[in-house]
Image 1 (cartoon, rainbow, N blue to C red):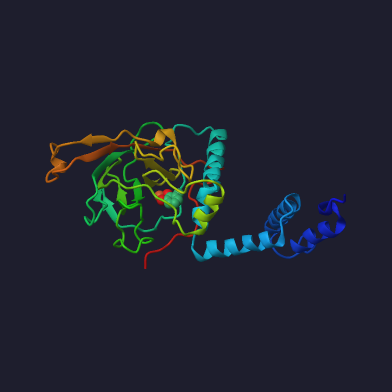
Image 2 (image 1 turned 90 degrees about the horizontal axis):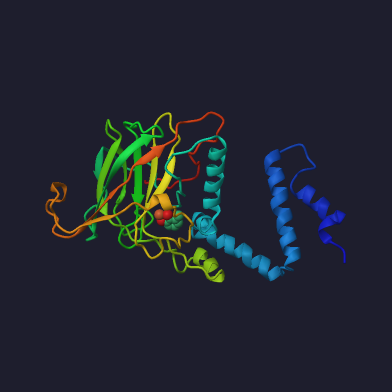
Length: 308
Ligand code: MBD
Ligand code: FE
């Protein structure tokens, strides 16, 4: 049987379609297009993919774009986590250690959230969620505080929805940037988030169904922590006890990112004055690595939604 992939018509086709036979264009794009299309040809050949299956895949990609779910499927297929593993490995090779572990940004960040000094209240009071007080210190790997570090925090509401993407929430609900104080300390009051679930009627969930997988994330809070001279940290903390804590469809849970959660029954602490229901407290310190020449930066350039 002829191996159609190694025949000259196929090889010539790959060279031409990727522009490798001309001097114009972008050499890196050409090489990558050649590889990706060649791998696709191989997949079609190896699995004897039918034209109907191929066009179903094209329609699927169209739907992903129309529904704005490319970021979601990238998380669900573990690609975003794989990029984290690559960052981790490069840092390990460069001898960096001791920083708070990174984990994925996810698709629901909104740039330029309101900026507060040292403390903030994240929720707008519209939901009767369990109150969460979270605080901590930003330090470097020598244990020295990082004054003025920016803690950019965002999380879901009690229904697992994120403001801006969820039309039922007011602008900037559960999103703030907090400038840490002179000792690198930050604190905020919010409400405990619920876990996130992929839109059940969307293309990401459709694919997950075919894989026999769910589309759930454990409850979590996202952070970008940054300061001049330091590598920006992209991370999350998980809410301990969540059913999906170690079964995250986006593969973002890391053992060091599950802080103890202290449930307080009364309103003994003055900061909880006026609260007549149980509330939760989390203390979590962030450790930043110093900027290093010759290592790719950790600020991931990607398109972000911008509030109007
Ligand atoms: C989220 O909240 C999230 O963090 C990720 C990674 C994917 C979908 C929703
Ligand atoms: Fe999230």
